[in-house]
Amino acid sequence: MTAPTPLIAGNWKMNGLAAALSEAREVAAGVDGKGPRVALCPPVTLVSRMSEALKGSAVLLGGQDINAQESGAFTGDVSAEMLADAGARLVIVGHSERRAGYGETDAIVAAKALAAARGGLEPIICVGETLEQRKAGEALAVVTGQVRGSVPTALKPGTFAVAYEPVWAIGTGLTPTTPEIEEVHRAIRATLLEIFGTDGAKVPILYGGSVKPANAAEILHAAEVGGALVGGASLKAADFLAIVNAV
Image (cartoon, rainbow, N blue to C red):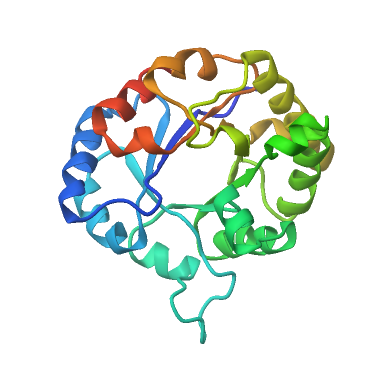
């Protein structure tokens, strides 16, 4: 079975004012659509404006989080339908910062993934272990457990991605060794095949943990790595494009 097209998604997190749209335009100008799929996920205040900035380009637009409900009394939240209405095509759900800082459980993440599909968005479902869990030898059990709990069986393979985030590597400059990355990605693939049968091979598995131009090529060519969820390096077009071109 043919491997899924790689996806390189940039997560701007809580960064970016209107002036940063110039970086998005530069990314758009540097992506010809012949390589990996490329996406930018800005803060919600920029989603609509970035949609205009990316219009006509091969770069996809994503959001960073959603409420699982379609609408209602949820002050400060946005729904999948709202993001899609603003021009988004994808959305990150279950990012480690949401799990740790906002108490999101696997069940909450799964509900958001289903909501994304309901609203016409492609969810990027995040999983990953903490440093304490890795030191305790629990990394594979934690990650595969999160896959089982966070990836709804109702989703159709090919319409979502899974992103592995070693929580201890995000923003720290630390990066797992290539064998460590491959071990976890292989375990995620095995779990997806267990859940979805042979169709589990259609799901891209992204790596997200201090991906930079200097280490992108090695990571992106590791076994079962089908792209990257990029944090800080996605804020500068030159750095992000270097990662895109490393595929």
